[in-house]
Length: 154
Image 1 (cartoon, rainbow, N blue to C red):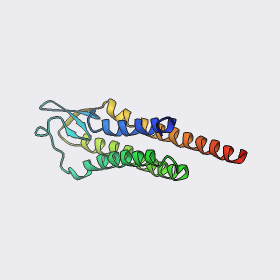
Image 2: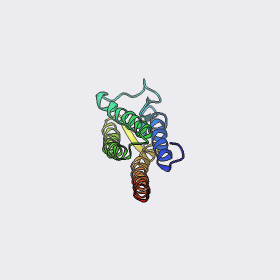
Image 3: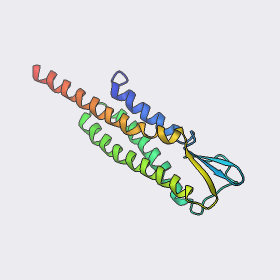
């Protein structure tokens, strides 16, 4: 299980998805000072709170779902075709994660209280997830080809 390269890609995806909860994604400069936002929340929750907080939960839900799907794919190491299907579903979840992440940051940026805004390294770290998922699907396909070729030789 661990000796296959796709397992390393999947574990890196889990690590990145979990890091998004702790690494700042955006910095908002307010009149009272600066506030950093990660999926775990604001670093100073009392200073700034946007009007509707409900939409801020979406990126966190998608990041958690992506991490769970990645762990499930790791555990299904004998069922490669199911791994590929779940990885494709995970790609959709990752795209929804990135879209909701940038949507939420832009919604907060549109607030009247925000003077200046900047994306931080956490927002760009989320762009690694589709790349790692693509590499995972390719590695699983190569693994499946090798197994079919070995079965043909038997």
